[in-house]
Image (cartoon, rainbow, N blue to C red; front, side, top):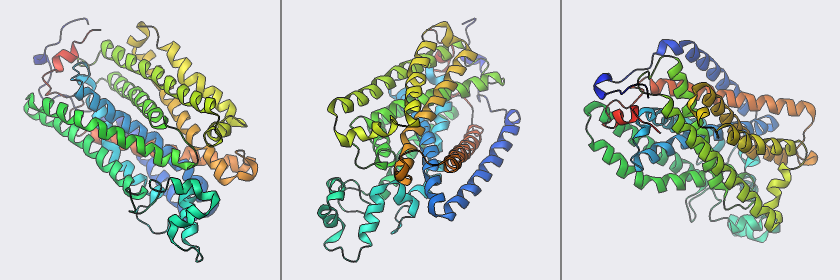
Length: 449
């Protein structure tokens, strides 16, 4: 730190986003998002193989931004629960990112169509168990109900064993449809409540909202853990109901926390470069955020390796099929590349202390981390498209189909990215870009490590 910054040196009302500096970006996001949504709607309405293939691309993009938003909420919860002071200066960024659950819930509707008695074909193609449920229900010769029919069929016996969880209705545990609503309602409420405490403190400058947020966060951390774990099981692991993994939820969480911290670094760095947060954020904050990104790089590697090692060691066909698909054909090269760029590259790049204090360097590392998280979501979801839609040729469709599917992947990701960025800019412009009323702001601004 070059000099001490007192709270009295800072504006009482905080600092607003200079929207004029992002006007061109906002227009670009609006155009790309509107066009992407229209094209997505057309592709889904086309039905058949086109909609089936695009649905996997859409799920990939949806999961990337859901994990980003969940990770941002985790950092808000952890900040309040641990009574962190250093993070006050950058806390408004994850608080604002976490407000995107509502828009994601709306964007995700084509993938679930909650409470529809007959799901669209693409949903049954992605989640095979839903397709089997609808197929068996539609058989006039079935007697004794769906559960009995599953138990009587050797091919669906495993699905019968998981029926208490994998079902759409209200028999037993809450169904798949209802859980979708529960996840977004719970996570959205937590995010809204935490931002509410923060904005209340901006208005009155009292310490009480800090204590309220701390108590609330300690109680909501288990809710967050349950919702994010089972959401990843429902939407990603559920693509192959025959696969088993006890570590999948933790694996997704590790990637979510890592990616979201990288995005926070990129956003804070962009704000600094555009003339914002001049006396609020300095190299100490980037150093601390870089250390957290480094820590979760190691944590992700530990969880990912542990999952792979346990499945390899047990050598059970229902478990090894996940890696068998991803270790054959072109996916083998993708898997090897992911291993190196998701762990080894960030690990080496983030080791040096001075590297984490250089804004350009740490932003480049953060961009790499975001890129490899996108790769990981692609690796988790898209091989299932080959298994489901092109079983006769394994995971390698013909050239034209591969090109079409690749364009679908780009379209879905760009659509979600544009809409998400537009919503984020809109939400960030509503209030100060840092918590100006937090009594610990002075301590955060002058942090040293």
